[in-house]
Length: 196
Image 1: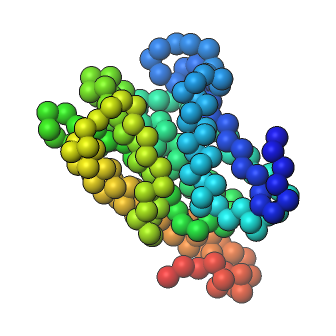
Image 2: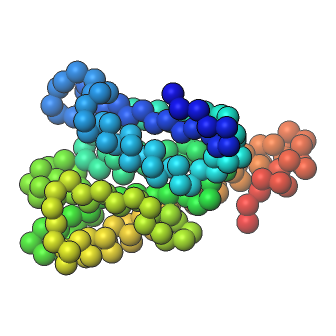
């Protein structure tokens, strides 16, 4: 385990359960794909979590894929963003991700397993929500630059849509929490967390 006196250390574990897909196998923890996914997630969230606020601390992110019908890495990134929000970890920006590909010169968003297997190419794009900055990009196969541009534009649009949905959900959750706190007689705390 790494130790850093000025920032928190971020560790990510990515595990796919044996029953997550149609192919039955042992729990995939040490596979190459799982290690690559963990590194990708760690790199993304090392950029957005304000680790400097927690010197000499350790932040453990554990992702367990229970069902995988495609786009598991993008779903994991979105889930980690929501988990960090729920845990109250300060972040510079929210990160959302999606997958995209191209089929017969038509871009396709949010691939399922069958589509991924048929097309052979899947690009996972992670983007900050407020800034619109691409913070992670991963391709499972070679793709031409022309097709990559088209796929990235579609994926960025998908990230914006997912971000809007997640922010709306989070806002509703916070407002419901504020109402619960307010009804229990702690109005000052409710005023602090209510969003407009």
